[in-house]
Image: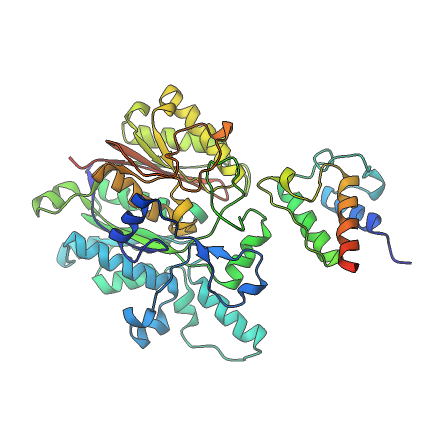
Length: 403
Length: 88
């Protein structure tokens, strides 16, 4: 069994164009959710989202690249560049032969699908751009990262709805832990803030029209976000030998399925997954200082998740902190676990726990320390990141402070 | 003559509950009829499509919505109100 550490992190999301801006927003409890600026927004009932604003693809990519890069791929490449640059790794020889890219995304090139369906159905066009298929495919982002950085090992995309990036990062962790490879690029990306993407979510009647307020008694649903976060996972001795900065250690991972309902979460399923992640990491419940919650701000999730945490942690549930950063960046769907891992690393590395903002009223069914509204200084040695997806697919990661 | 709002709403609920129309009693709750949260959201969608109305309903807190779903009768009453508002 090899130890696995994180040596690079990168992001772009509604809170910032890089990790530094995002962490500043976490510390300030700043909200990145705002009025959506998308075509046909007047025909939507839900008009807010954690949209990446002030973003100009032409400043990042050339015309030929944009013809091939859906917005979710663009986000992946921007976040990937920051992460790989920070890691200091260059991939060649044996390292390149083993290292791959495992990303999570639920919708893939949703903007490309939306634009081209509109072209043929609404505008009546009989011809679309030749690159629609390579642009919209769910593995496009992973492929472009592999091509840009010479990553020749196992690369693929995981789609488990809102748990996609936790599943992806968990697999990357297992690859390194098993000795298959010394390094992996992993994380997730999502961009479905387009007319069709938001319209589909409206149908479920679980979206809030005004704000994401996880765990607050007056919550009224989720708010969709977009963005990406990408990490470099590396085998511990390999990282140490080259003097790399270790951001945190990944110590455990578990995945499990509710096998129950296509949308309603299960307390038992969530609790089984958290318990298994602790066992995989050889941790006692009392070791955990912080949990980045799935915390969608829906009644169904928040009550179930709090009950599961209370079950697993017993009396320690009242001592640990659990916040939902979705209150700030929105629900980044297939990329959300990756963006949220940034908050886990911040807690371990800097001793600052990101808050749950928009917290107005206590809910007796969510009676945990949700770090309401204001970031908190606290020494955290172990953090968990929860993801409980539609379809009952759960994935929990356990991280430890670098030592 | 066109079917009444009541008859149409009952038909939608009956279809969702996989029941005969005559088995949908006005005082029954949707839960009594075996309609779960997904079935409820689907029923509301069918009602919106049938009457071309917009039903104010948030699955996170059905009780807080203006649209009363506590029984078949309350749903019929709420839809009648929305249809009347639309004509006004």
